[in-house]
Length: 273
Image 1 (cartoon, rainbow, N blue to C red):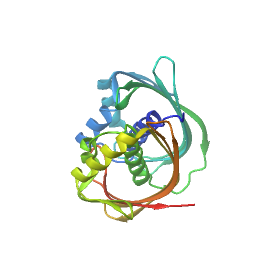
Image 2 (cartoon, helix red, strand yellow):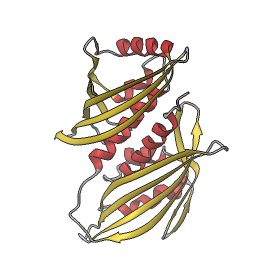
Image 3 (cartoon, one colour):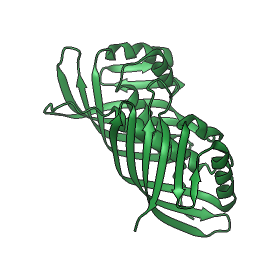
Image 4 (cartoon, rainbow, N blue to C red):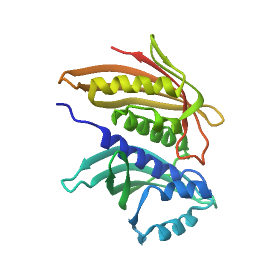
């Protein structure tokens, strides 16, 4: 039987949300969204020292005021331990620009542990940040749009891979005027239609796993983004049959930075060889 990628989608959702938090100014709402990623006993360790507890963590965010921060993620490895804890290692290039204009580029390695929550997103238990070398400072390349879109993408996949029987959880990440073109014969424009489609899928599948590649994100207009992604998909039917598919998704995303997630306005799905 194929392996489910549900835990990986959930973990990557939280990782991109965590990084994305630093890529814009922390309003009160965005601080609350960041806090919701963390377990109460969170421990954050950096070369500067350790912070324990959510109150100390939130206080530490004031040190980033006035900065510009970008992350270029290179690799994410997710594992589930026998204890049930999730570990995730992230390799990325960090670019920070101080309010004074002074900047630096560093390779960061994040080693994290997360508590699982049944059918919900996991919470960070520990975050350990290590510096793995410096780079000659380059032109700052904003990463907010990509991180924000990838958090949405992996959360959408997490919801799909739970194989839900209704669309309740999807309402948060769909605009009021959404259109989902899943195939030439399947276009969904209401939550009820999506719920009915999900219920039919749930009768047929026991596992649904997605492997995204070739992800590209661009800005179309203010707070409107376009995401394209290729999916290799594997499914396992309730009667033990393996299914596969290769598709390309094109999304239009609308964003309001204080919300937990950006929202999907449209999805167009095409088959690919």
